[in-house]
Length: 403
Image 1: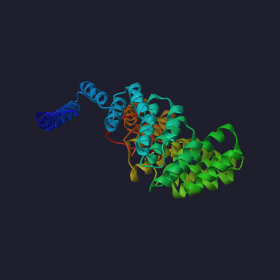
Image 2: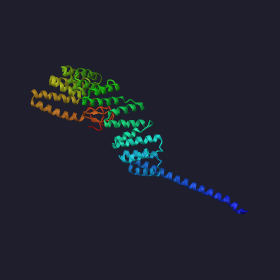
Image 3: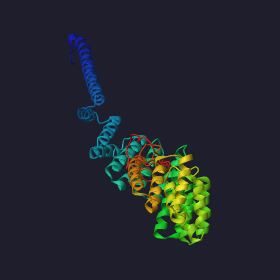
Image 4: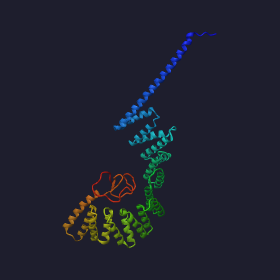
């Protein structure tokens, strides 16, 4: 029988205790190293944020990239990096970051939708519209569903794919507590205008009807409906439709005034059409309508009648534009039977007025302040629909872009 010394039996608990103490010591060392690593990541994160706040994006990106490499699980940091790359115009790097996230199988559905949305925005920024559409369509019915539809709607308008834009706007309306019927009406109007240009009158009629269903008595839809009737050689009916514009949207009459006169001339009622436009000048004499009425009045009734009309306008709606047209009309009269001195004075006055009105008269977007010489249904600056006032502004030139 094996004999075991008593001293060895006493030594076993001591050895077990030493082993336990060693394991605890290793655990403490490991925890301390993890704590140091976390502290280092926090310091690096704070450093990156500090660099961003101090407008040093290059150094901030380098710092944040190092953190992401140390800890691949930092999903929010990856999103922040991708967005930062995109804002700086480094779309390729942003795409790589968001593609890495979108390809991970361990992401939660919400994070996967977020990655698909951000990747779609990257592709949209890079001009890769097909890939942007595919990525945005992968976004599910969560937090990022509405932003994804907004991006798709933006993209379809860039592509001028109005049919897809109508679908996207309708889907977005179901996701938000916000009406998009104005945009939908405008998209149908774009389709109608393209159909009229192609002389596809059947498609034009359908598009106009759908636009009026979206927004009853819509100004642009009524204008296009009149154009459709003119294309069918039914000017009298076109005048009836355009008369609705004159009654309910008189500020938009300058957009169709020339066609209004052409339709009245076609049915031998040019004087009646001109009288209606002259009547509208009582409230609409500050825009292009005045220029058009002065032109037709001079052609039909002569410069003397135009001078009388402009003198009346200057009494109730004085403006530099009206004064310029008055000087132009008086110059035409003076060239017939006036003295050389008066002709020279009127030419000098007219030259100064034209220089002044050319620099001041603008259509201005009510959303972004973008100014333009011509009227747009969609602002070229911010892409909002019906943001332009149909009345031209005249006065001090506001700050902001123009064209």
